[in-house]
Image 1: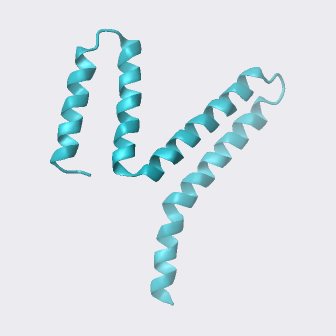
Image 2: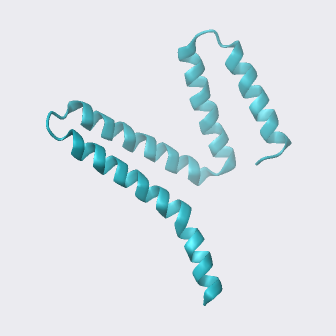
Length: 102
């Protein structure tokens, strides 16, 4: 979606951002416009981004509430996020390489 529509979306997003007076509402606007862009780009990417955001929030809550197990919450959160990255970024890459070799 790196087209003229992308630049139009970016321009509108920037103008609305600078018109909004308070930083709190600017952050809400950036979050919403990012989700809208992901939806327009790829609906599956939106689902993954929202799921990872919810997962990260749960892990952060676990870290905050835990007295002794902070490291466990932190390590498990990082491991899951890295596994998701590896799965979606590299699995298709290796699939393509192996399919051309066979």
